[in-house]
Structures are given as C-alpha cells and as structure tokens.
Image (cartoon, rainbow, N blue to C red; front, side):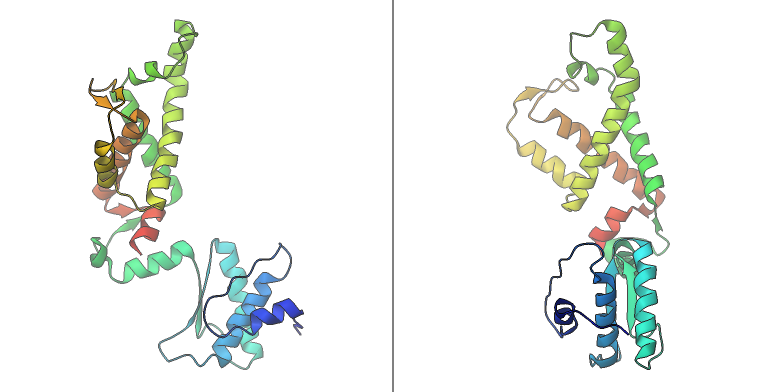
Length: 237
C-alpha cells in the first residue's frame, strides 16, 4: 500500500493547471506520478473522448510508467490500459503527425528514420561537401604543420570534424525550428566580413555557410526518401 510523504501528497492533490515537480533520483517521482495518473483516471471526471497522457523521454520509462499506472488503476477497481496513454516524446509526435500527415506536407506513407540511419545520411552529405570543396580545409589548418601532417589532417581528421560540426549545427537549427531556407536568408543579411574561399565572394560566417549548405543537402536527402527524422517529428507535431 502506497503511503505518500507530505510532499508527495501535494503532488497527488493536483487537479488542474500547471505544476512543476523537481526531485532527486530515487525520491519516488515515477511512483508518485503514476499514482496521480491513476487517480485522475479514476476520479478526474474525464470526458469520453479524453484520457490522461503521460509523456517521457525513453522507452524504458514508458514500460515502467505503463506497468505502474496499470497496477494502480486495477487496485482502484478499473480495467488497465483504458483512460490513459504513456508515450515517449517522439512517439507522441509520431501519433500526431501520422494521424493527418498531409497537413504538414507529408505523404501518407512517409518514413521515420531512426537515429542511426539519419546519422549515416548526415555523414554522407557532409563528406560529399568536403570532397567537392577540397581546399576549404587549408584556411583552418595551421601553417606550423609540415605538408605531410597537413595532408593527414585533410584526409583523416577534417572530414570527421566537419561531420561532427554539421551534426551539431543541424540539430541546433532544428531545435530552434529554423529551416535551411530561413538560415540562408539570415546569412545573406549579415554584413560581409571575410572573403569566402569557396566563391571568392565576401561573407561573414564561412563555417555557418558550410553548415547551412550541408543542412540543405541533408533535408533534400530526406525529402528524396519521403522521410523525416526524429527532430522533424517534434517540429511538425
């Protein structure tokens, strides 16, 4: 029998509105929130088309929450798996987008790339960019290295570095819901400070220009496959 501590009881007394709960690991957050979900299902006066939604970050937490809420609901004399749903953030986004994909410009049979497949595409487009712009690395490699060492950096270190930088750039752009076209427009509005080694034209942020180009190529690759990645799912939902 779950006997809540005073602070846990404050959580269980919740009925509506916003509430933030901050606690250290092992303090009973999962069990307390599971008990709250079960209470809302049993006594929260839900409409027929309503349910309690529990959203977490990882699949293991989904299983944990679902099991605990189900057990607590049964203890209250109700059937499990009714009146509540437990999803990861990406799973919830998938449910929303999958219901009416045309509203966000997707085909009914759109694909969702897992992180490994998305990362492989990012790596491919980044390395393709490096291959098509072989002299850009020279502007970033110190002249103190001898030519043999510089060639090793160009061949082995530079492609991996650009892949990592582009990966972080794309994720940050998607977190802020900025498309490649919007980034391009913003970059073109910046005052020119440097001369681009790619075109000979003046530009202000050569690394941003590079990452914007890779980001655009990555999105084109997704579109060609009729696919979205996890970051797109969150944005589209």
